[in-house]
Every structure is written in structure tokens, then in C-alpha cells.
Length: 283
Length: 281
Image 1 (cartoon, rainbow over the protein chains, first blue to last red):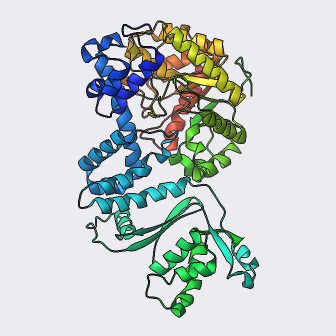
Image 2: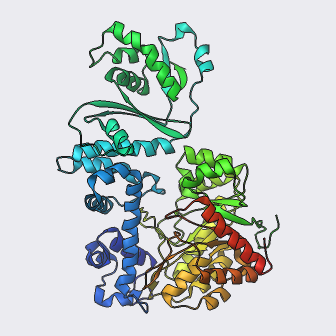
Image 3: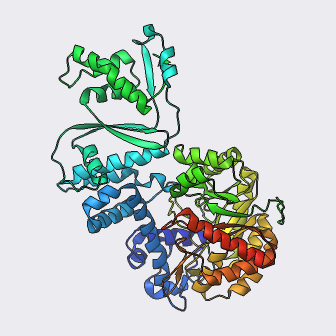
């Protein structure tokens, strides 16, 4: 209790955090009721809490921290969402990122996960392209997620050969943790490929698409799927046995049973080469 | 490896912060650096490539863990789950030592992901010392805590930063990571004399040194870790190496990260500077 406002360590810390986490700069943060609750100090008397320096006022010194807080979290979003940033344009991205930071103070220990909710934040904006940018952000974020997801060595060709034929109908194929499956309302994977190739395609019209993102070794791979193989993988990921997963492949698509069965070996071979399957379990 | 600190921790030589942009280079070239420092939190929640690279690197180099979220000065309760995760990682990687910063990063469960200054008061000192002791019991090793760069001073402070650090390290029996650039930045920002600051530091508690670049904002210096070390900091570094008898040194580069060779060149300067004052390599 040694400053003129009688603030102890706890009050001082809560006050400073309330000023900064408003994300609106030190001057406005200082006026916020949350800050005033802990130390009822205005700009005129701020020097009684924060000393001025020879070159900066008390408010300017507080502003250094207020600015760094927002900047660091915005940079985190910039790293996770480079294509969203490029296509939104810098002014709009910065405005949205700053708004996100204001609305989403972090409680995380690592910044790796800070941007997780940015996609849903974009989707919820009442703007015509909000849904598209939400989908694009979901896909960009998934690459970050599988990068950090725990390692699980996928089944090898030798593992596959050891599986008895009679077990196939009831077996459960467990997918690796570093895998994400998406059903989008836009062809976002194709769009992302074009962007990464240096093109600048027009924002696409609504069209269903299905995407697999999986890490093989150290690198994330993205693959646009047809609906049937998406449904099969989705069912496997949900824990269904292979037989039920294949049945799921017939839902919502135009493939007949024979057509589907004819293509299953090709799909499974492709997925095995991508490192999609982790292990088998008895159902 | 010899030791010249009161904790018996080894002199590791000259190291670099392990950063993801350098993963390919490090795991293919295996550069001639003595050790690597990792940002603890980046490896607590990631099981992917960072974890795999760390496993590869630890087989060839000593590793030091340096955290940013311990929030030792916070008035929130200590996060024992976090401490246990830190200990598990430290045990798994068999780190040479581990540490964090003399700061707080948030209250009410929030994390600002920034290193906020502590008011240097008797109240804060008691609080921080108690928390360090508890943390060290959980971690079963000394904490090596770094002086953070600061941009404001609380009017309520009654102790100088160096006095706070001296009493904190002695009363909690923790070690000090002296960031030489932070000494320069904070002294500039607060109008303090860096020489006076250094003479107040308990050098027998210093286990490790940090070197980094900063940005000159005209009215203040900002600790960006995004530029070469400036000459004034090299001067302080030579002085610290002389005063301490030579400590494990790490070059940090965290923004606008250049090619690994640029960081290595800074490290070579640190070796040369140490040799020049008779304490290296």
C-alpha cells in the first residue's frame, strides 16, 4: 500500500491488465470501469501510479505495453492466416484482427492455439463474404493444427499384409491424430492451391467441397475429396467399423454399390500412401 | 564442462535459440553451436514437428528451457499443472537448466503473452520469493530467472531493480539469467546508469547470459530480438564476462529471423568478445 492510491500488488496488477486488455489503447483503457474498479485514477493523476520518464509521459509508458499486447496477438493471426490476410486486404484484416483481439483475451499458455476461433469469428461477421473467409480460415488453421498434433506412426505396407481377410468386415481403422476432415460450402482447397501458386483467383461461388488435411512425416498435405470417400473417412474417424463406413459412403452421393466398391481399393491405397491410417482395433 | 556458479550448473559455451524457421537447417547441417535454448511453452502443447525436432536436437546438443508463462510475479495462484508439465518436459529432454522471467503475464486466468513489470516493493519481493521457492520444490531444480526489459516504473517501487534481483535470488536461492541487452534497454528507458546496475547484480547467481538486438524508437528502446546486438551492449557483455569469469551465452533472434548463418555470426562475436577479455571460449 505504498502509492497514493493505496493500491496493493493485486490491485495494481488487475488495474494494469484491465487498462491493456481492453485493446483500445491506454487512454481509453484507463477510463474503462474495469480498470477504475481497481484503481480509480485518471490521466491527470496517473503519475501517482506510473512514473513518467525523461522522454515519455506516464500514459505513453503505459501505451508501450498496450500497443505491444495488441500487436503480438495480431501478429499471431497474421502468421496463421496469410491467405485470409492477403485476400481481405491489409486494412480490413487489421481491423478484424484487432476486433478479434479485443473480444478474445487469451487464457492460453502458448500462442500456438490463440487463433483457433478466428474462423468462426469471421463467419459470424454479417458481411457477404464472411462465410467464405470463415471456410478459408478454417482450412488455413487446420494446417497449423496438424503441424502441432501429436505424432502417430501410420500403418506400413507390412502392417496391412498382416491383416487377415476375414477381419475386414468388423475391423476398425483408427485414423492418425494429425488429420482433419472438412465439408465446405465453397471450393476452398482449390482456391488455396491457386493462391499459393501465386494466382489471385476471384472469390468462388457457393459449391460443396470435401477436404482432407493430414500430416505425413513433417509436412501437412491437403487433398480435395469426392463426397463418398469423405463420408467413408468421416465414419472411420467417428469410430465406425469398416463395413458401416463403406455404407456411409453411399449416403448423399450418386454412386451405386458396385461403383463404390470398384473405387474403394484406389481410395484406400491413396490414403495409406498419405499416412491416414494409424492402427487397427477390433470393433 | 566446467562450472562457475553456485548451483554447479555447467558452462555450456555459446548457444542459439531453437526456432522453427531454422528446423530444416539445424537438422540437416547440425551447426557448430554448443547448445540450444527452447521456448518451453512451444514444446508443451505441440506433439508434431517441434517435438520431433527437439528429440533429434537433444541427442546432439545440451538443451536449456526458457519459459514465458510462469508469471512468477502474478497474484493469481501458481499454476501447478503448468509446473508439472514443465517438469515433465525438463525430465524428458534432460535439460541443463530451466527458467523464465522476473515479471507477471496476467491475472484472473488471463495471459497477455507479454512480460509485464513488477513494482519493486517489499510486498512484491515477499510474494515472488515465496512463489519461486514453491516452484523450485515442484520442479526439483533451481529456477534461472531473467531480468525482463521494462518500459515503465511504478511510483510505488521502493527498491531498485538490481536490489530486487539481488534479494530475490538470495532469499529464494534461485539463479539469474542476465540479459545484457535488457540491462541496456531498461537502463536507457529509466534513465539509469548501466554500470551502477551491473555492480548491484549478484554475479555469483548468474548462470546464463542473453544477447539480442533492440529497436530504437527515439523516446525509448524496445526489446524486439529482431536486429544485431549493438556496440554498447557488446561493451556491457565484455564487462559482464569479466565480472562473472565467463558464463554460458545465448544469442536470441525472434522477429524478422534471418538465415541461421547470421545468428551464428553474432554468436562468433560473443566468443571473440569473451576471448578478448580472457574468459572464453
